[in-house]
Length: 455
Ligand code: NDP
Image 1 (cartoon, rainbow, N blue to C red):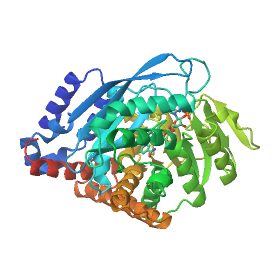
Image 2: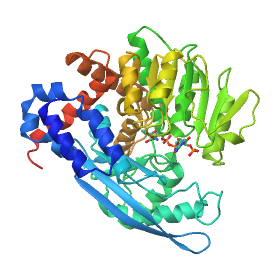
Image 3: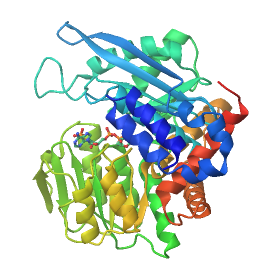
């Protein structure tokens, strides 16, 4: 590690000692940048690393709302505006009790590199709240009602609206923020700002959404993996795949893998995992999507033939022969032991759909084994890339066809793959997508920051 990186990391750890996820994400990136920092002394002269690890702005606010029993509840809202060097801040909103400053700063930091990799002009941001739509505050075991979610979203936007805008900061969905929440947030923004602009992405098709946006992160993850396989002259045909999660990213990754002839053997959620030895069928996947998106239930409720439910387990250690793994649920969900199991059982592809799902020791094991491992910031960038395409359509006041958007998404995922591959090769780390993605994402932002002076 160079002295420069060492100094920045020491300072970062001292300043943010109670933010472990943020430190983990920053360390993971900074430790791979030595070659590019050495070749470009202007980055250190301009304190690029020191500026990149400090968000441009952190907004924290109170979100008061009234539940269905008439009681006033209070949550905490956040927006991290991390870096706007190459475009307006862009990144999702997460509603989950696990949300705190550390988690959102890690996500905003990652987002800067990811958005840079998409080749589109988007800066990085992230936001959310510790609000839990999956647990009503007054009835144990019940979810919040739609009316409660709407009142929460309206209150959240009542503060957030003054900080965002189509050319300033464009939020989108993330965990527990899907079409329903984006609709309520957009409606409230429109009322308060008295304007209709593409201020949020992930909108419904009826009011400015883009075709393929819901599918984009999962499809993009698989397209990236297809590109990795193509380098070794392989395809997904007949490959055994395990996936974690059963939300937006996981289910569309599963859909694309099935379309490509792979066998999807597992999905998971907080209740546990389902294992289907012969592979999940399109009909079963449709049932899972209906259960999670409409009925808002748990995988334990699936009773279809051939489905084995394993309570409170993730997807990694449930199947004997595994070719590819797709962590698509949450951060740090795949640890060193899981990685060892996957490698021992034949896994040669890991395509991260979630943000930072693999722990540092798991990443080390994958890199050491020289398997096709893609970090989330590269392989899950299809979602935000298609959000960028939604922004373009909103600005043009036009809608593109499904085929057009899908073709652009495929092209972007190939470009991300190739840029990461080439950056890794250029700095002597051929085939290492971690190093490649970090360097390719970093360089564009760093050059823009140098060009814009000290700001
Ligand atoms: P969803 O809320 O749609 O799905 C999340 C999935 O993860 C659910 O199946 C959920 O289970 C599971 N999960 C969450 N927390 C836990 C936990 N503590 N233990 C076990 N399972 C858990 O989110 P998304 O699919 O949108 O996002 C998944 C990941 O992908 C996140 O890391 C997100 O940041 C990342 N991502 C998402 C993008 C997008 O476009 N949506 C873009 C880029 C990255 P349950 O249903 O039981 O809660």
